[in-house]
Image 1 (cartoon, rainbow, N blue to C red):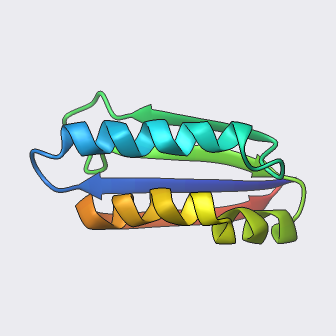
Image 2: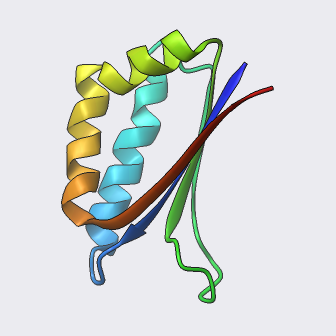
Length: 94
């Protein structure tokens, strides 16, 4: 099992687009069968630098790559790229 974790820092005053992005990301669970589990969250601690997180699970690295290259994921990702300042990610095997 592969865990894929991503954190984003968004530009100021982009809360509405951030919500649109996270909603779109969550919809991918019903579109991309390689996603075994996915959850997103919005930071509630103002002392933290990052605004939102994704924790997702895939059977293999190949499944993760399929997800990353899926046209629906690319659409959602492009929205994110237009509003983010920074992104950090890690993938690990459990």
